[in-house]
Image 1 (cartoon, one colour):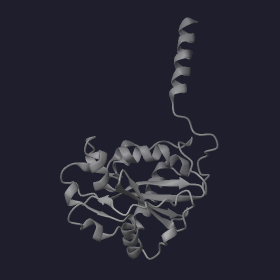
Image 2 (cartoon, helix red, strand yellow):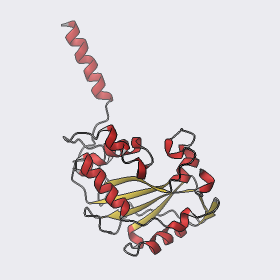
Image 3 (tube, helix red, strand yellow):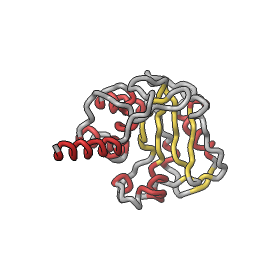
Image 4 (tube, one colour):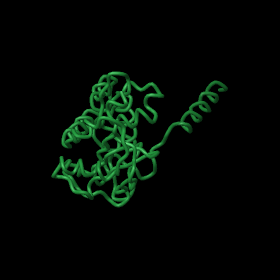
Length: 218
C-alpha cells in the first residue's frame, strides 16, 4: 500500500507540473491563420548565435524563415490544445528545417500551435509549407549589403510590392529590442489573404529599426 500511495503522489506531482491546455482552447476551433515569417539574421544576432542554434551556423544563408502557422481568433488565439492525434516523428520535424531553420522549432510549433489546428502533424506541416510558399519573400531584402536602420514601413512596402494579392491591413511587421523581427500575414483557413483582426494588427512604428543584413550575420 505504501508503494502504491507513493506512486500515486509522484504521478499527481508530475501532472501538476505538466503544461495544460487553456480552458476553452479546442483543437480545430479558431477563425483564421497567422503566417509568421522571422528574419533569421536579426534573430541570430539577438539570441540564436549565442544559444548555438544550427540555424545560425557559419555558411547558413537563411533569410525569412517560417516561424509558424498560428491558428488565431478574432480576439486572442488558442494554444497548447489537447489533441488525440499522434505527435510527429523526429524525421518529420527535421524535414521542416529547410524552411524553419531547425527541426526543434518545428516540434515547438506543433506543440503550441499545430495541435490547435485540428489537423494531423503531417497535414499541418504540409499546410504550413503551402502557406510559406504562397508568399514571395522580397529578394531585395536579401541583397542588403550591410546592417542598416530603416523604417519598419519599408519592409511592409517591400512585401506588398512583391505580393499584390496582399493588402496593408492583412500584413504586419513587428520589431523587438529595436530590431526588425517578423512579417506576419493573415490568411483564411484556405490560405487566402484576409485582414488581420485588431489585436494582430500591431505594426512596428519604429522609424529607425535595425535590419541585419544576410552577409553581416553569417
